Image: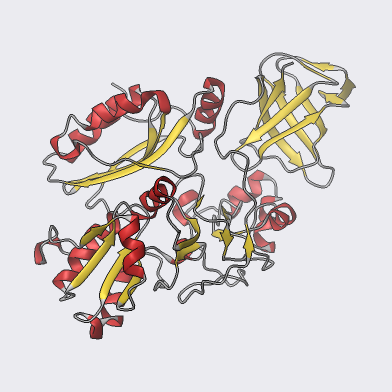
Length: 452
C-alpha cells in the first residue's frame, strides 16, 4: 500500500509534460473535529494518489488546510473524495487566478498539531465565534467607509508585492507574530472602528477574527475566501479591484497577478519587479524579488558570495554545507543586508510600473519531444554543457529543448557535438556529449529532442 511519493519532482514534471493534460491549481480548508488525523491522512493519500492529485496538505485534530494541483478531467472525482466526509460536503474550492501545470510536483500530506501555526490556545476562547464574512462587493463597500481599518494578516514578503489599498501590513514573518502586534496597535479602536481583515485564502482570518472578537473588538469582518476568491468574483461581477499587484502563493508559481500594477522593486537593482525567486545556492535559498536582468547576471543568486558558491564544483559546495542545515531547512523569508531595495512594514500604494500580460500562464505541450538524457555539468567560463545520452540518438543539426525547474524551457539547434571527447556527428545511448550552451544549466535539467 503506497502512502508516500515514489517519484522525484523532476520525474513528475516530465510525466506531467508528457501527459499533456490541463491541470487546475486550487486550495481549500475546513475546521472540524478529526479523531484520528493519521488515518484521515492515509485515506486521503490513497484516494488522491489514484487521481494524480498533487499538493501540500496539513491535517490536524482541528481540520484540514490544502493547496493542490489536479488534472482538470478529475475535478468531479476529486470533489467526490471530499464529500465522503460530512464536514467537507459542498466545500468551496478556491481556483487559482493563473493555473500552472507545475504548481505542485509532489503529493505531501502531513499531520500537524494545527493546520495553521497561530500560537493560540484554542481552549481560552470560542474559535467558532468568527467575524462577518464579506463577499467581494461587500468588501469593496466597507473599505470605502471612513470608519474602517483594514489589516493584512499575511507576512511581509507577501504584502510587499500586493495588498489592498490603505491596508495595515505588519512587518512579520509568521502569522502568529501579527496577532499581538495588531491587538496592541488597535487597542483604542475596539468599539468605534470596523476591523476588516484579509489573507490569501481565508483560513488565517477564520482564527484571527475569533481571536479579535475575544479581545473585545465589536465590529469584526473578514474577506470570504481570501484574495483568491476575491479575484474570482471581480472577474465574474465586473467589479473594481481595490487590491493592487500580485497575490503571493505557496507553490512553485510564487504568485498570481490580480492587477497589472507592479508596486515592488527588484531587491538587487531597484527596477520595478514583483517576481519572487529562491537563491540558487542550496546553503542559502533566500526568498527575494529578482528581475530578469539580475537573474541572468547573478545566476539566480542573492549575493556575490552565493554566486561564487554555485560556480564551485559540486563536491566543494557539499563540503561548505557540512554540518549545517541544507535545502528547504534553511529557507529564509526575504530579509538580508544584501537586499538593498527590500521594503516591509508600512507600504505605500504607489504603482511603479505596469506588468506585461503573458499570453497564457498555463503550461501546455506545445511541441512533440522525446527525452534524451540529463545534464552532468556546466562549464561557466566556456559556456559548455555536458550531458549523458540515456535514450535515443542525438545528431548535429538536431533541434533540442533543455528543461528544468530553474532553467525553464530553452530551445537551440546543435551545430557541433563533442562525443566522448572527440568531435562527432552523432551520439548514442551511453555517450557523454558536450556542446555550447548560451545559458547556465543545472544538474536537474533534462535534454529533449524536438520532433517535427
